[in-house]
Length: 161
Length: 205
Image (tube, rainbow over all chains, first blue to last red; front, side, top):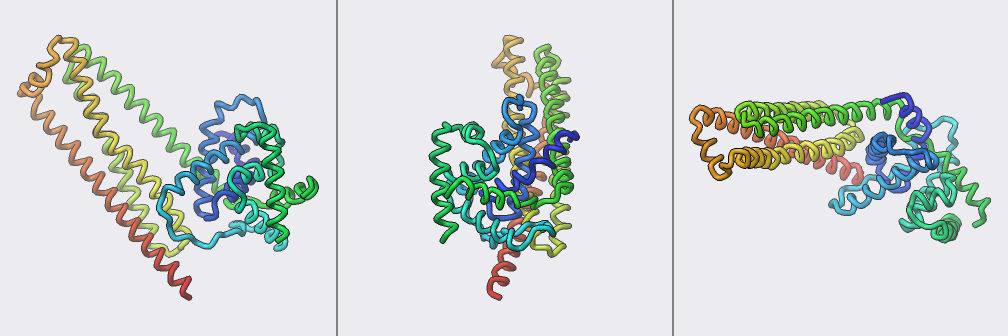
């Protein structure tokens, strides 16, 4: 593992953590998924031609891994589900309780979105542009705009209730 | 909801930090990447040996080809056996602990590892048979004796005990590997049952 890849882990692990958290509730599975995503990034890096932003490239890999994970989980028999752990495993002392609660509420709202809308919402919240989201999801910019509007509408409804 | 509201949500969203310590993640990734590299190297060596064996087979030096193919297969099996044993030992160490979280983590990881190992071991059987058939076919084509190849091979009195011995060793090793895997799997089921019981009792409380 070279220094460049270690830098990539440092820079993008938080984004990957958030994307994974939107798809999977179990913290232990999330940790495994985190490793899987970065292994996939490591494998895919030689094919990255630098056409877009590296952040979008990694977000795309993370999203694809999460979708594969969901597809597998649906096929597997249901197991005993532990309480979803929405708190950070390594709490940051600077993070206030209020911030954590706000995040947990937002995460729950995002998790409740229909999959297609959720995908757009997650990437938009990560600050990616419409064009980048369209590229990651393989859909048109118009479709992104439409789904983004629906996401805002549902989020508003859920968060205000 | 306006774009400003979404920006505010985005600010809340990015407050979420890492769930795994970056150093811990790097260490785990380093181990996995090294393992992937090692497997890739082994795969290349195995493929190279197979190619060399086929070339030698085509040149009709059957015994040497048999030694190379047999040797690499046995080495791969011993590797699989050692890995299965390592997994079982690690698992035994883990079950002596009582950390619920760690166990959940480990059972998930071991399930994945066992799946890969099983696929590898079960993959050896058809690939060995296919390789042998292909080898015989190539020899047959070269000799223009396609139908007589098997008879010749079995009729080779000097070679037969060696072939039989190799076959017996391979099947014993395969058997041990599969047995170890089954035991490890049973172990996992046992741990999971224990975990479910613990969780149930916690919920009851």
